Image (tube, rainbow, N blue to C red; front, side, top):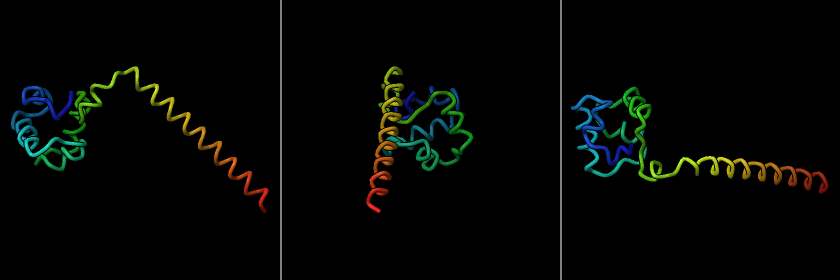
Length: 101
């Protein structure tokens, strides 16, 4: 669930009601962009509470929640392909440098 759209009730499933209220109140100043930002902006919210939120499935950003699970492996494959291309390019560069000397 997106921490930027969660209500106090949803947040209270993980946090104490007073802390959930602070998260919602601070969000009125602008949506959070990272969990680190949530931790920095909400007084009394430390690393252990952030871990509880993430373990419970809370995320920052509706795009991450809306992304279908099937799309994630494709992104990983694309990343692996890009890494392989970069390695090939490095090998070609190294090979070209050997011929220049």
